[in-house]
Amino acid sequence: MLPTSDMFKKIKSIFIVEDPAAEQAAKAVEPSSADTSNTPSAPTSGGQSSAPQGGTPDPKFTELLLKAIETNNTDGFDYLEYMNSIRSLENVIPDEIMRYKSAFEMAKTMGVTKEKLAQSGEHYLKVLANEEKKFRDAMENQKARQIQARADQMASMEKAIADKQAQIEKLTREIEEAKTLLGTTKSEIEQAMAKIESTNQQFVSSYNQVFGRISDDMAKIKSNL
View 1 (cartoon, helix red, strand yellow):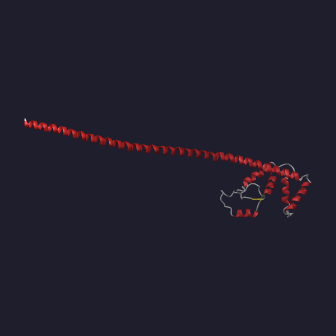
View 2 (tube, rainbow, N blue to C red):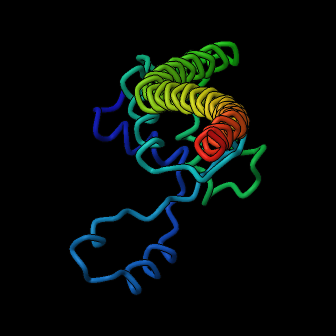
View 3 (cartoon, rainbow, N blue to C red):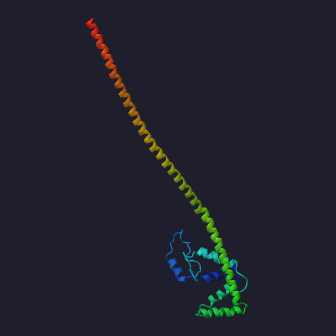
């Protein structure tokens, strides 16, 4: 197995193809600001991913995955060394199939079999699957902390709004009922006042009638006796 630093470079060369022309073009237009001068340009992926494509590969995630592969690199000649052998033959053997066969012939001299290559490839797929699980768990934790907390807060606010709306509707009904009662009471007062006034007028009329008769009689008594 290669030393750690060399091994990571070899692993990176398997999965990432650096484009020197693109790098030079990026440097030519790179801003001089300190805030952006250290921003890495996105590398071009050298292989197809079987995962659903929903975005652009991020260099920091790619490096994290490659570091996991490096950490779990098995001893001896395996999938990684085999793929490096194929890469080293790119400028020598143009045909891809021939590169695979030639690299395998060299690997067989070190006791490597097709089954061992497949097993080591499966080993690294499991390493990646484990990294994906850790990432998914971290995402769920982030969701619970940042999204679920706000969702709970939103639900609480919606309930508070609904409660206040119910209170408003209740108060509105009570106001309408009070207005109706107010109108009824006002009508009753007006009717009572009209009845009292009618009774008063009736009394005054009766009083004037009786008082007037007595007054007339007293006047006649005084004048005739």
